[in-house]
Image 1: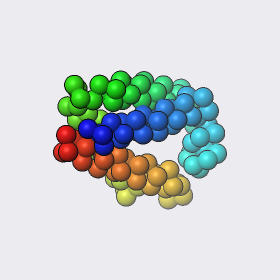
Image 2 (image 1 turned 120 degrees about the vertical axis):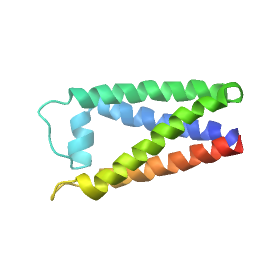
Image 3 (image 1 turned 60 degrees about the vertical axis):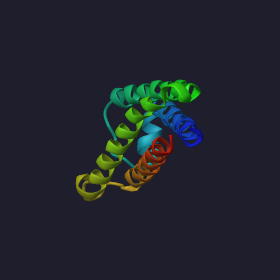
Length: 125
């Protein structure tokens, strides 16, 4: 349970940081730092940021009671694995000719590490 709890805490911290970055300064986070295309409005990115903060809070709640509700972590494991697949497919087939791939490689690596850690934690539980 220790691996699962720690993974949920670390993943919650990453999601909270990323979510706050998107909610507060999406243009700086996406365009300035990662070189993504500029959008006319960033409302969707702000909404995703706020949802990421909510998801981080849910991860912390589950981590606090992991002995009782460890099986709820399957939802995070499946969602994180799906996100890893989407980001890898986007890097492989979805980027335009002059689009920066740095953000997508970073997201792929993070999602793969979290997915493997969650799956191992569930296996060990």
